[in-house]
Length: 472
Image 1: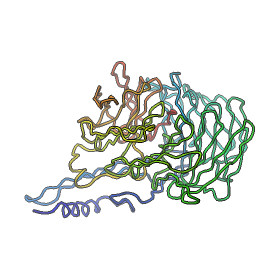
Image 2: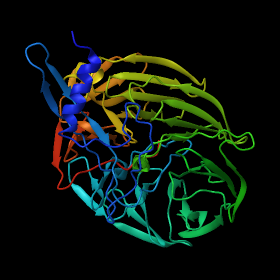
Image 3: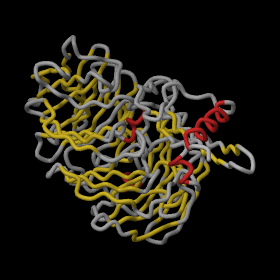
Image 4: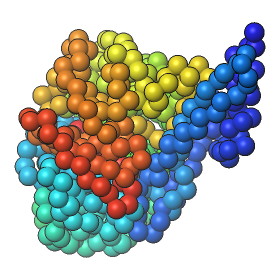
């Protein structure tokens, strides 16, 4: 009998003749993948799922391989990273029920009825804390749009004209700049830029970078070089000026910083997997490349605890933080495994496969054994938590290659299933009543109304990518 390895080799050779292999995408997929280029208009992450079926051998051997690669490719200027606040508020206003989706011409707003409320032609944008507004950085100004109607409400002049990271927290919009390296703070209520300070010369720029801001805006933490040699700058805001208090680099002077080699900055519109905990002293960081969760002490500026999550392949886990910042849920759409991390106890409290089958292929045994798919630096956005924290909504799985399932987080019981054409990125409205989900081809949006189970389908004129995240 032929060995599995010989069959795998033969399949690789056959597929190489059909699909040009992506350099550096080994089984571990841990080489850095640069996925930063975008068309000038500001399209989102280019997602491509390539599936090839090859039949090899004769009567003695029949092997079927499905080759699935979710690849983040060069698409123009890198997106502007965004991060969440300490604790997410209840977002029940009309604007929080409208999904804003990355498209090739900017971000597109779609309401629960499937009506397109507007298009904002920018690449750097973030939603307000309550979901009612969209803040877009355009050159030397900040444009504020209604999330409900897509109409421009007002414009605020900036002190700088560059944007490398973007975070909204309450009345403030924090902007991490690259040229020069610095942090700018915009007061959204007063309608003016109130502070700017430069960072040290050693602070890296033009890399994966993001900002974390405390709930009152008094503390800011700028991260950069997150692939391998992370740097962090700690700043304080006293109401009128920003002061740089400390700046350290990973591995120097006893500091150990979180990092995630290979994670693409194209994940930014849906928010990177970092959160400030309610204690105001700790940041939790999750790396989808190796499955590591780390707790970062904001006073000592070093990692104090780590937990490794079981992951079948790099960049397979979809991270979801609970609204109160106490739990991290990690769904693996390729296997159906769900893992829960208690962020206060710093421990895995539950991990199990929930009705196992993969969302990516109707032949999961082939994918798992012969040719497991690998994600090139992308983070699956296939799960969302209900506002009351009781249910996790996921796309695919539960013996359906497409669709939506609801999992009760206390016991992993599947409490509901809906058949629709899903499999792509998923977004839950602020009131928890509507689920928006893309299909695998990213050219169709299905809108599920949970109260009635009805589905509205929207054909997209151009592919959609990730949804602009509500703070959570």
